[in-house]
Image 1 (cartoon, rainbow, N blue to C red):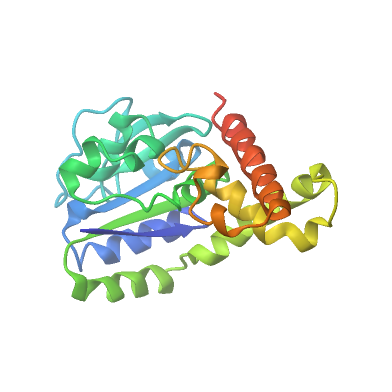
Image 2: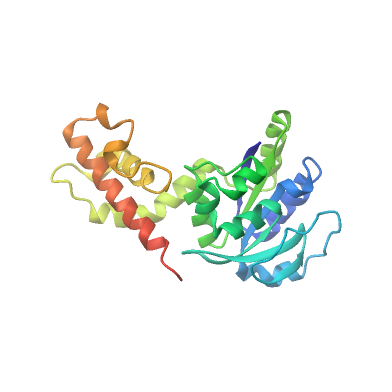
Length: 241
């Protein structure tokens, strides 16, 4: 089973994608996450009857467009509403990082979010966007699921990465100092170090990165600086709101 994910600017866009995806894959394989600030919008949406409840809620349970909503907290993000069986398991684990780590949700659903993309979904929720996660067990349907996400307005992963980095770039450039060289010239290597520090299941130090042995000493300083700043970013964004 593969998780195909779309990031949407609004709950309405994500909702529309979820409704269309339920015509292609089983309803309980369609999952939607949205900041709880959208709760009023959720209440205004007609309740459907063909999607089973998502299990014991950790907070309020609400009627919604694609089933029952489970309210839970994601550290550093705050209250989130999750619709769907996978979203319920995610809530039980305490957030995206727990799901990505591969425990209950991965075992129960045989699928999970790509480890190197989770920070993008966390940032999307932090920025008030909506995330739709489709669990697809038929490879022939994967292109159609991706196309439905696109036509409903999903942001591409590349665009999400660029948007996320653009929001950080100014502060990272201002703090940059490896003794020589300009940030613009070193930015690609710096990002390698920075993003590698974001996944709990990833390297615990820059020296553990596969690319490390292929870098010269100065390049290693750049990657190490990015890695250290990435760890600081994780600590900062994981702080309770």
